Length: 392
Ligand SMILES: Nc1ncnc2c1ncn2[C@@H]1O[C@H](COP(=O)(O)OP(=O)(O)OP(=O)(O)O)[C@@H](O)[C@H]1O
Image (cartoon, rainbow, N blue to C red):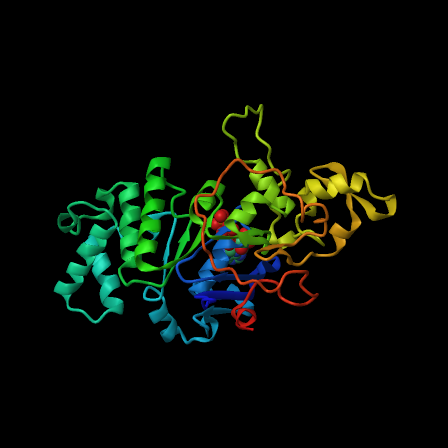
């Protein structure tokens, strides 16, 4: 039986007013998270991952930010339609967020006990003594030994990994249904990073919590995600179950991300990188926003009839690309029951598996992934699976 999604983002559009006019760092973004599932959002810096996540909690600064359209449904209730008072009870209690740098959430002048207690009493009707007991248990749950004593310590008395555990304890003290983790381990060294991610998985299993995991690290995605949304320049360009994405990456950007991961046992003079840099929202290219960096459009242009090819300048060099890629913006197209990609040049990629990345995914999930019936999505129809399609 199909489960009901916990979170559905539908066609979200966000703008920011800047001195150079309005920029649109989030365009038509949709994703769906089921109970107990981890959805990873991957992409290079500036592609709109954090702005999308912050908007779930209605934390983008307004102004200059503005939600221009879309819905954010938590158990079917549109968070964008709630009053600020209603939203305050959603934050922390239903949805919690952790960040890369714990000190952005922890106040240096209060003990960690006081800070967790404050988070607890904000949402739960409990007395101070009980709140301290909950705080102590929360520290125990995240693997902090000698929790009773640690409650009296200040953040600076702890290591980075320990502070990250405290932040997780604080975020989870009210048993939220959804945790948004924005690059939670980027600032930590690899062994601590693995411990924190394992801790999140353990807590997720115990509590049936859903996670939106924002990261640029494909290794982290492989180990932790059920479903992946790949973002590029404000849009979701590929959306798939993790095993599908790793077995058969369809979008040339995703392929490029995989190729830039160093592989064990292969020596490289230098690592493959995706040519160029992520475009700035103030000056996105026309057509497909990836065409200025796309190896596939160049490869196909080399074999195309001249009238289908145009020359563009990339980093001072003339480059031949397919005209269509510079004019039409591709929308997400369903390629397989649990796989969508936004690219005009998928012929030949949609059937044969692409070169397999050496990263292997650990989670063979029974992940829910709404199948909207296969085949192309009709023009103008939104492509990401929604509960209403599932219910049909
Ligand atoms: N307060 C703001 N004012 C104006 N523009 C903003 C603001 N916050 C974000 N943006 C715009 O949104 C874009 C996307 O930012 P976002 O933080 O979502 O990127 P990201 O993919 O999460 O990158 P990173 O991994 O570096 O956090 C930025 O490049 C910027 O153009």
